[in-house]
Length: 200
Image 1 (tube, helix red, strand yellow):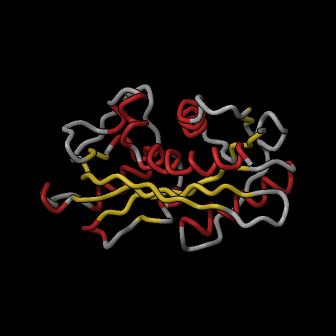
Image 2 (image 1 turned 60 degrees about the horizontal axis):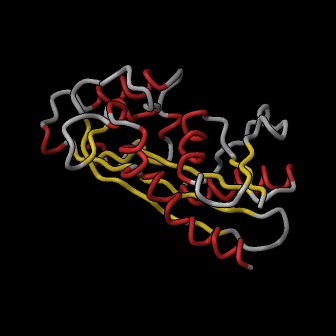
């Protein structure tokens, strides 16, 4: 089965390729199908709405079943922000976003820095079949300082410390991160659905 991964984020693409490596599917990137210049908006106020929307656009343009996701960081001390707006929380890149976040949490003690990553992965078809959506999440807390320079970190990974760990996601190995990350959990939840399709 051919499957398009509907993301232009190279870090996400790496995670999908690793986590789906054991399935008999051929994975295509947006670049492979000349859609890497297509910028799809995120008009919905839920992760699922945005994931399905992105998947639908790419599936219809490519004619291929497409996996797309939307994810966000929810910080309890900020009332769940930035949430679905995580990627648009500040202008610029990753550093601008997590720097703004750390500034808003200045002076907040460890026990009140609890947070979680949530991710919805949607499998969307180019025909009229209903999309399939799954949720993955990981609990943790926000560090006081970023851990930069990790090989697998992107987004808010530099400031998010998963539950049971004392270092940020960005400092973990790819295998450790995939084992516990919100996207890893969501992709693993999607695998049985993909296996069922392969048997159909």
